Structures are given as C-alpha cells and as structure tokens.
Image (cartoon, rainbow, N blue to C red; front, top):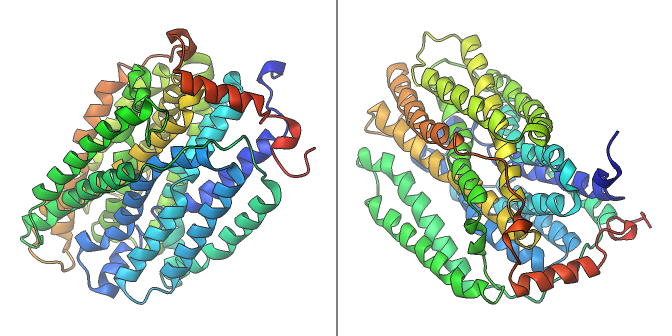
Length: 504
C-alpha cells in the first residue's frame, strides 16, 4: 500500500497524463524523418550533410528555445503555455506536409520545434512540483521515458508509413492526433499557480541562438569540409558558437542576482546536478544522434527496406519504456549507482560491437545489439534525470528542467552532426551520390567508433554518481527565490479545484 504521504494530490495524475500524452506526440516528430532521409536525399537532390538538417534543425531549434522555458513557465500559466505551444506545433506540421521544396520542409520543422521546445520542461517541472518525494522515482521514470521512447519510435513509425505512402503522410497523419490533444488540453487543463512579473532578457535569447546555432552548424560542416564541399571552414562557426555560449553564461550572472536570469547558473553549484547533466550530454548525444546514422547504415549496408527498417526499430522503443519503468522502482529503493554503472559497461560494449558491423552481420544480431543498447540507455537516463532534479531546491526546478532538456536536444543535434561528419569522412566519398556497400560499411563503422569513444566518457563518469543529498540541508535559498516559493505555496496550487476542469 502506498503511504498516505506519498499519495498523489487529487487531479495530479490527470494533469501529468495530459501533458505526457501531448509531450509524446510532439517528441514523436523529433526523429520522424530519420528513416526518410535516404528518400529525401534523392527526392530533393541534396547531400547527406544537407539532408540531415531536417533532424538537426529541429533539435537545434529546441536547444536554442528550451532555455527560455524557465521564463515561460514563470511568466505564464500552465494552460496558456500548453495551448500556444501545441498550436505552434500544428502550424509547423501543416507547413511541412505541404512543403514544395527542401527549404520549406526545414522551415516547417523549425516551427514544429518552436512549439515542442517547452513541453519537456513543462512536464518535468510539473511532475517535480506536484509529486511527493517518495513517488518521484516512479513518476520521473515515466516522464523521462517520453523524450527517449518517442524519438525511438519515430523512425519505426516512419518506416511503416513510408513502405506504402509518401513522406508527406508522416505529417498528414500526425495532424488529427495533435488537434485531438489540443482539444483535450483545452477541455481538461486549467491554470496552476500565479504568474510572476518576470521579463524576457532578449540579449540572453540572442546569445543562446548564436552560441548553440553556430556551434552545431560548425560541427555539421566537418564532414562536408573533408570532402571539399563546405562553404566555409567549420572552425569559424565553432569558435563563434563557443564565444556566444561564454557570453551567455556571463550575462546570466548579474541577472540571477535580481532573480531575472534566462537560465539561473546557480543550478550548477549542485555537484550531483552538474555531474548528471554532463553525463546526459554524452548519453543523449549517442542515443539521439545515432538515430540519424542508423537508418543510413541499415539501408546501405544490410539492405533493409523502409518497412523492415521501421519494424527493426520498434522493439528498441518498447524496451526503453519497460526498462525506464523498472529503473524508477529500483532508483527509489537503491539509488542510481546499481543502475548506472552496470548499464554504462554494457552500453560501451555494445557500441564497440556496432563499430565492427559489416554486410556479413546478420539482422537478428543487429536487432539484439540495438535492444541491449536502448535498454542500457534507459537504465541510465531515468536515474540520472531523477538524481539531478532531486539535487535542486524547488525554486530552481524551472531552470533545472530547462537546462536538462536543453542539453538533451543540443547533444542530439551536435552529436548527430558529428556522426554524420564521421560517416561522410569514413566513406571516403568525394561527392553526394549514393554510397556503395563497401563505402557505406566504412562510413557506418567510423560513425559507431566515434560513438564508442563518446561512450567511454559515460563509463568513467558512472563511477562518480552518488545518491542525491537533500538540497534543503545546504542552507537558505536567495531571498527572491524564497519569496517566490512562499507566493506559490500561498496560492494553493495543489488544491483539488486548481488542477483540472471539473475536479472541484
């Protein structure tokens, strides 16, 4: 029996359920075009480096805008944020469905991502705010499974659709589902808490866009530069991006003294949060970034059709949801170490195996390897996210969720670009044409070897993970944050009538 102190407040499950379903829908689109990439390259006559921007552009937009979610969640109420964000997603999906040219398709993906960006921080922040401490491991296991399961199932859905329909149907079929979620949210959700009179710092938003955008753009040019096709040297935008990120951080320091930071840097003073965040950079980078390369390898090396490719990826998505749910229960009882260390060892071993894949490797063997890879990733993802967020004081949840969601998407975009560059370099091809089997094999091995090196960083970091200490034991929070906490508590956000329509 669940202790009375750990029971969910009335209406909480419905609120989190609506947010979870909506988040799943929008995140399903994150890697939806991965399987379609070979088709898009042929249809639009673009190179792999250019084609990957239908995914990288989506991830990059998310990374640029997610830091603003902390401001959005403080400035506006839950229902308003939900309705505006999902409406943006629907507009972007419509634009992508009717896109007459590749540039318009990318533009539609960017609008999609603009609506998607706030959903994960909104879901995580709501869960951390409403769920009792004793139930957080289980609930966060479910909520953190969404950004990992949905992108993993996206390519599977894509393969199934593309086996009989045009790539445009990937967006057409999504529209009625998104509209239904919008109607459900408008009907069931109502405002929670009291908006705070914070203002958006435009210089911070600009620096965020310059920093993240230039960095990922530079990384995406490495492969094209090796083939002599890059318009500029990749090192110039990389340098601009790093400078932009440094300026962004320096900008936040004076702002956070007035509780007006775009992204409050005090979250990084908590070592458990920072360590888990750094590990998630590499875990999400491999997990999301490889979904850009895997369709190319399976299509060009093993010869799978789009239907077979979709079926191949379905079990991995299912494994993520199952392992995430189980790992939440283990985390509540034993903490993160019994999960993270064994999973990291297995994860790296599988990446080593994948770096040796060639045309003689059986599809069954690859399927088993991919199942183990996704399961190990899920076993690390949930405890690291829960441990990181549990290390923060409640006043910093919006900034913590924004930072965590940002690094996931930025890492996916950045590492996806790196893996495509490694794929291009490994192929040895000097043009944008279709690779032969030998070239595709070398390309895939180069990409997976790069991922294996990244995995070694995760393996080392796993041995430094500890159970999260109580953040309230570290002393008082800043006055402005304490005042904000008192105001939110006084507002009675957790009363029965304050969560959903019709619960009073």
